[in-house]
Image (cartoon, rainbow, N blue to C red; front, side):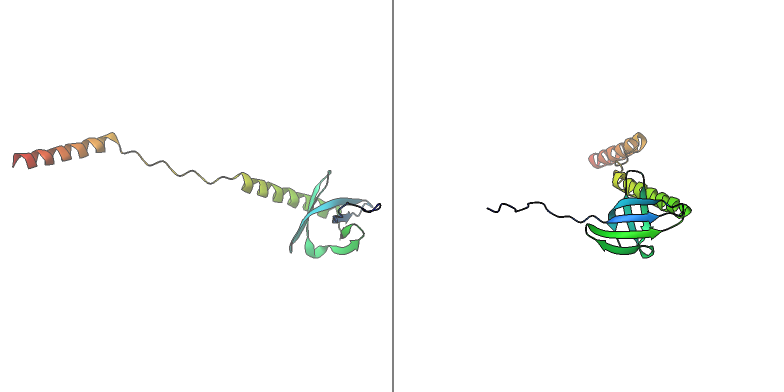
Amino acid sequence: MALFASKEVYEPQDVLVIFKEDGTAAIAPVVAVNDERLYAESAESNYSVPAADVKSYTGPRGRIFLYPTTVENVTDCQRIAALERSTVLRQITHFAPESPVAAKLPMGRIVIIALVVLVLIIMMVAK
């Protein structure tokens, strides 16, 4: 048994840093990365940015994605993230339509069929 053994599991956390023109920066943990988009969520806002536009660096805790942008572009990224989230939620909650119940025969058709069958039976018995 080792005295200094640590059982902590190190899990890197990717971070998106968005530099704005007004001198501020938004920092958000990255949730998903694919070839086209980088999606990050924070308590203040969500961001979906094009993967080709970010610069990637490696830090001691994981990857750091830098996204230099304008204030208008940040609002566009937030709008796209909200749209992607609503699309995903819509797909999750969209259920396949139930199969339609077999259409019932109208009473008029049932009566006509019954009369035709009755006439046929009478004709066969009368022979």
